[in-house]
Image (cartoon, rainbow, N blue to C red; front, side):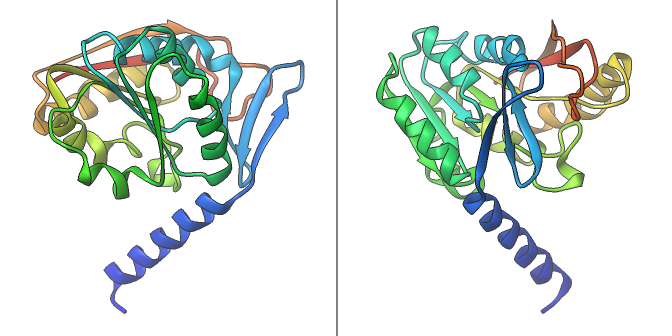
Amino acid sequence: MDAADAAAEVESQSRTTWEEAAAVFRTLPGGGQGLSILGHDVMEDWEAPYMDALAGVAASQPGPVLEVGYGLGLSAAAIDQRGVEGHVILEANSEVLGRAELWAEEATCPTIVLGGFWQDLVGSMTDATFGGILFDAYPLSPGEAAGDGEVGAFFVEAARLLRPGGVFTFYFDAGRNWIECVRSFQLQTVPKLRDAGFTKVEHDQVACTPRPGCTYFWKDRFLVPMATR
C-alpha cells in the first residue's frame, strides 16, 4: 500500500467512525444545549444568531436550498422559516441524521434528508439545481479545523450545483482575532472561490456571545461569507 492508498484508508476509517459515533446532546453549564461527537464540541445553541445569518444568505435567492450538515438544526429551522421552495439536508452522523429526519416530517417546506458525507452524495446531483447552499460540516481532522480547511474542497461542487445568481455561504473562522479572520478570508479564501467559478464574493458579520468556557470560539463576531455564482 503506497502513501496515497494509506491516506485514503485512514480517511475512510475516520468517516466510518464519525458515522457510527454516538451523538451526545447535553445541557451546557449555565443552560442551553450543545452537541458533542467523539469528544468534540460540534455545535452549541448560542450560535443561533450566526446560523440565522447564514440561513438568510442561503435562502435569499429563488430556488431550493442545499444544506450540508444538520447539527442542532438551528440553520435548518431558520431556512424553513423563510419559506424556501425546497430544502435538501445532508448529514453524516447516523444519530443526528435520525433527528433530522424526524424534524423534516414536521417542516413547513418540502424537505429531503440524505444520510452520508457530501463527497459521496453530491456527485449524482444535477448541475444548477439550487438557489442557495449552506455548508457547516464538522471537520474530521486538525488540518480542516480552521479557515476553509473543511469546505474548500466543496467550492467547485457548490459552483456547479448553484443556478446562475445563486449564493453560497459557509461556516468560517480563522486566526486569533477578528482582523486576522477577515484577512485570511480575503487573501486566501476569496481567490479560491473565484477560481471555482464564483463571480462575486463578499462578506458580512454577525455579533455572537460565546458562553463562558466554550472551547472552540472566543471572538465577539462571526464572518458571514456570501459567494455569488
